[in-house]
Length: 142
Image: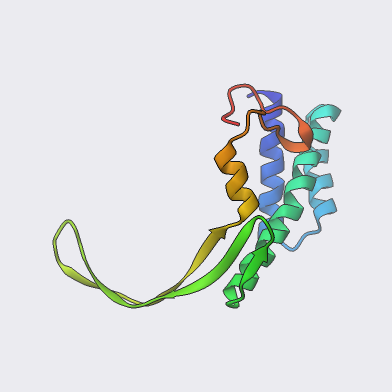
């Protein structure tokens, strides 16, 4: 296994541990890195992954919590997340053609903001970079 792949795996394992336990971020990072046999450069790489992804994950958790309470979230120029109620309906199983009752449910709707719509439709000639401006790994789809 390549060293960089090993470093990414270590970072993902630490993020999983953070998700499943109430441990502090610093404790998980230091324990994970101390027990690994990676070079200092790759330990720094793993730490950058964790320190950049964890705050994003916390923000996403807050967004999910707000949506779960039925609140509408608007991010200027990015888009709007809101909860919509879908009415109960009758559907048909395509395999058996049996009529099935589909209960009412709440779903998340996203409306794309003006700036995002504009940037996506223009396309980007510039190749995106990975974490901290690092170029993506060779063979990645970025």
